[in-house]
Image 1: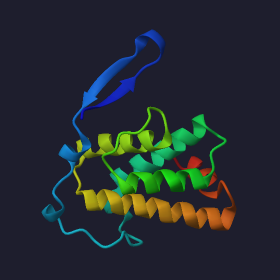
Image 2 (image 1 turned 60 degrees about the vertical axis):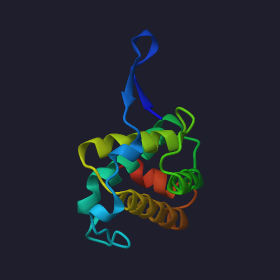
Image 3 (image 1 turned 90 degrees about the vertical axis):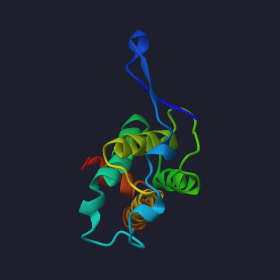
Image 4 (image 1 turned 30 degrees about the vertical axis):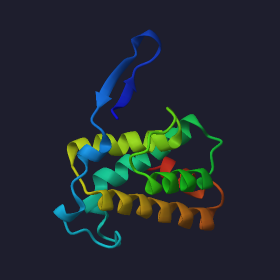
Length: 144
């Protein structure tokens, strides 16, 4: 199923067809992936991590009422099914679209993408526990 990426506003909207995300993923056997992203390894995954966190930050700017739990749930949904199509404009859709675009520049295995989603999810949970219901969102908005 082909994904579409919409650019522009009003009468100036352009829809761009994108390859299915599964066609952009490398086979899991193509690379040896770590079991998790450890401290200091983030640089290796900057493109994918930035894509995920950038989508979250942009969504929060547009929807300031969301909470960290909404981010946790969105990440959990995507981890369950990386290729599922989500409702246009929802947080899952925005994150998935950014991952899709990042894969166009640097292909990764499904396992690597899932590791990045897990890494961000762990960060959200940590900031939420320390800084409250919008701890992660308020943290990330200052950096992205």
